[in-house]
Image (cartoon, rainbow, N blue to C red; front, side, top):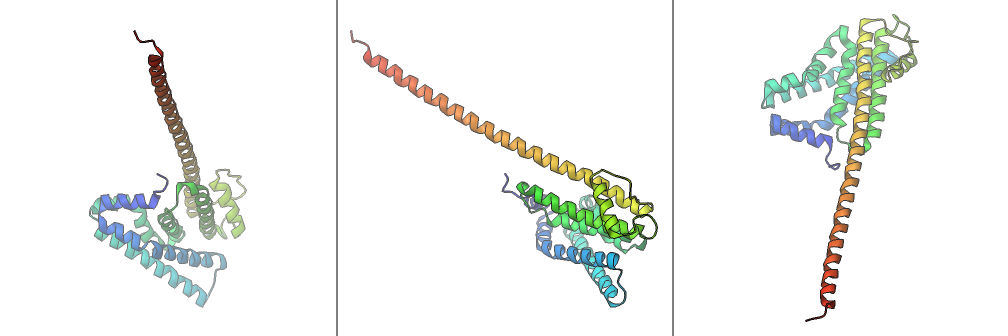
Length: 255
C-alpha cells in the first residue's frame, strides 16, 4: 500500500468523479503550475521585503499578473471540462478565491493562498514514509509566506516592523505557543494569524495521524507474521502427530 502515492490516488478519484479529461489536464499542468507558484512567491517576496522601485517593481508586477493569468486559465479549463460542474465548483471554492482575491487590492496579502494551494497540489507525490521531510518543508514554507503576509499588513502600523520579527511571530503562532511579544493589530494581519493558527493545528494533526497510521500498519504486519508463524507451527505439529501414529501402528504386533 505504501507504493501508491497520494497524488495518484487523487488523480484516480478525480478521474472517477469528474472524468478522464480533468485528470489528464491536472497531470499535464502539474509542473507548469509549480513553476508559476515559485515565480509568484519570488516576486511577492521581493515586493514586500525589498520594496523595489522603478523597473524591478514593474517586473515583479508583470510576473504576478502573468502567473495569476496562468491560475485563471487553469481554473477556467478545469471548470469547463469537468463532468459534474456544480459539484466541482463548490468543492473547489479555495481555487476560486485564488483567482479572485489577489486582484483585490485591500486583500493583496491573500496572494499567499495562491502559493499554499499550488504547492499543496504539486507536493502530493510523496510516500507516507517521507512525511518528516514533507512536514518540515511545508512548515518552513507556510511560516515564510505567513511572515511575508503579516509583515505587509503590519509594517508601520503595529509592532511587527521588521521581517525577522514577522518570522519569529509566525513560528510562535504556528506552534500555538503565542508568547505575545509580537501580535497583529490590523484586520488583515489577524486574518493571517487565524489562518496560521488553524494551519498549525492541522499540521500537528496530520503528523499525529500519519504516525498513528504507520504504527498501526507495523503492528498489523507483525501480527500477520505471528499468525502465519503460528499456523505453520500447528501444521508442523499435526504432521508430526500423523507420523507418530503411523509409527505406532507399524510397531504393533500383528495378530
